[in-house]
Image 1 (cartoon, rainbow, N blue to C red):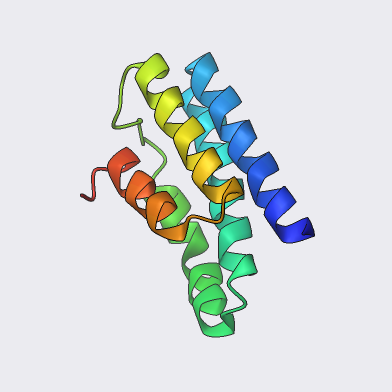
Image 2 (image 1 turned 180 degrees about the vertical axis):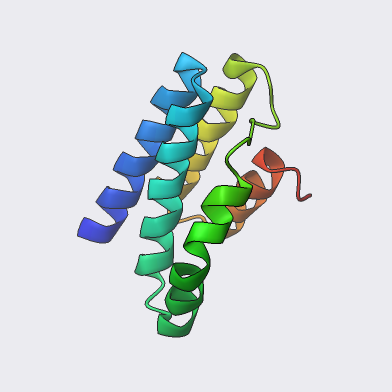
Length: 104
């Protein structure tokens, strides 16, 4: 469906940004994916809270750097995330997001 295709396209953009090792491009691509995921949930309350907090979140992440420093390893993990999204494997996708952001 169109929503899934959009998420996969945005995940592809993250892989490409990660391969360039440009942290700002990676941050922007990640932000686009997370915004699309948030919208796709259909959870109006969640979307409203995030919309209200967006400026503070962006300000607090201004100096963000990827937790996985090696662009090859990081990009491979983003590729697995893209594949999990494409395969509608929510648990795998969540686990990979946690791995990428050191929440596991």
